[in-house]
Length: 473
Image 1 (spheres, rainbow, N blue to C red):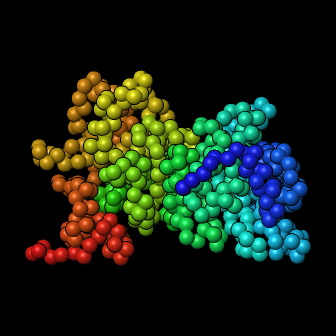
Image 2 (image 1 turned 45 degrees about the vertical axis):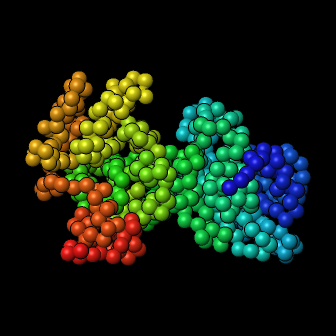
Image 3 (image 1 turned 90 degrees about the vertical axis):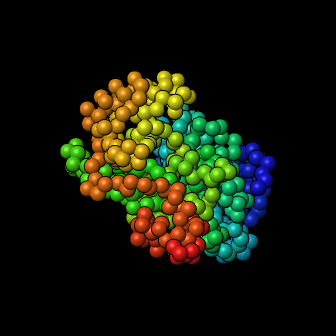
């Protein structure tokens, strides 16, 4: 992978000077910041067939058709469809045999004159990689982290140029395509939390890996998958919902993982404040839990975990947040309703261990304040202590040190909720052992894994599955 990180000026000029690239720019909500670069560098007559900004809602609906929202993927797709069809209809006969037609479109919300709002947008480019070819799409969702309107517009312009350039010149290098989106944009200005690529050029791409690259390259802290295995824009799925989330490695997902969610769900649904509120469940894997023994992300292993969770009809959240207070803060962007964190005793003990917060300025007190700042509850599944032969629950857990007083307060105020499953947890259980059983062909692993997951592991030879051997061997 190699790139010289060309400037925005260079990128726009290179496209302008390429006589084969010709298309339309349709921009709504943030000015005409992308096409402005192509006019600014000179030679735009060789690239820009049309530039349009239909700001008035009635005018916009008349052109593209109505949508429930104006800043959404559906709106962007309607813009791409309409403008591309027009472009082909009007220019195919005249120059179709020598032209790579394209349409760039965006629909965004940036800071207004007075009001402060959550600023985000959808950007997309539809393009041919050769004359007369079928078109391809690249679509991204961006969140603007800056508060200044002019800075947001400037960043939008650069990002749009980067997207068009990547579509034409980096379309066969997924990592480079993703990384180049941040060319000439300083860290902390935007997050890109979804990318979609469709068309003949991308038939060999796995969109799950493409979206994982957003986190690896630092463009996003979170990506979200639906039970169908499709990427989703987090705010679309999480907005105003009550959220129940379980963190784990899921390598592979086990019966215990599913049992924890099931028991927590039963308790969660008893909360009167969310009786009339839409709800969603998430299985979360942190990037730290995706790392292999050599410190890199095993992409094949990542896909296998996602496949199994989705086969069990779970939403899957991949996050770059190591601490619970970080993921709760993130989720609070989208909802003011209750968030339930499902965890076992070992993870709860880590949560209340001061050594894990040495890098937080205010230490564990600040971390706890952040975690429980909004409507957060911990739903704690018990564990069996082999050494003492006792069941450890959130009720009888002995937290050491002064922090035990905070723990007891949270327990008494029902912010730490003990779970009491009908079936006692297994006395001796290790997810790592399950993974080892799979690799060694020990059929014992099937005792710990859901039936549907067993079928997929055997069929697709996941997690190094080898033919099972009898116990006599």
